[in-house]
Amino acid sequence: MKIYKKHKRALDLIINCKNDLIPRINEHCKEWARRKAKADEIVFDEGDCGKRITRFRTKLMSLILPDGDGPNSSWKTCCNYFYEIKVQDGDNGPEIRCQLCFDSCGLDGKRMEIYDRISRSIPCLETWSNDKNWWHIHWIWPDAGKSFQLVPADFDEEWLNKQLDDMLGRLKEFERGLSEEKWVKDLLAGKDAAERA
Image (spheres, rainbow, N blue to C red):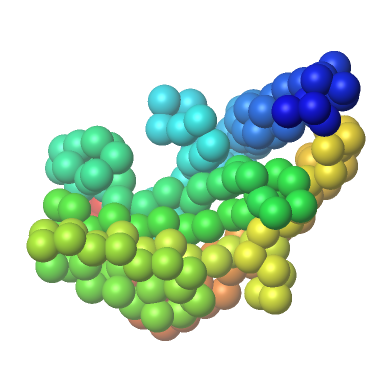
């Protein structure tokens, strides 16, 4: 208590600054997502986001993993996947990562099969389940050796934009590789034929 009384102003400033970083980073991630959605690079609905998570989708992944008939996912959405930019407090300061999250709630047989195939193609970070559903979280970015990217306390928008653009590049690389797999090509060709009929 003596240390706090002696350095109250400095310690309060540090605590307030730390508490302000996560919302600032998350708000910047949402702003980045708005810009990318406006440029038609991602599909973004701010209502799907959380206090520490910016959720978005892509057109290609939504073709591969189509929406269900109603909002029956655990997120109360018609879709059963999201890419998420997760912001959290790390040991050395705030951190971010991009993850691909699948939710089995409300999946039918065909869509469940598609989710299983994609799940096998990328490293799984975490899995949760209860009596009815499972959730898989897959790593997308940063590099495989690191689970999160440290965000410096004095970050600027240019630095964070570069990190998020790198993340989107990695995500597009993953989707490009996925789209080259035969089963995905067949799936997309079948959808195109059904849409033309």
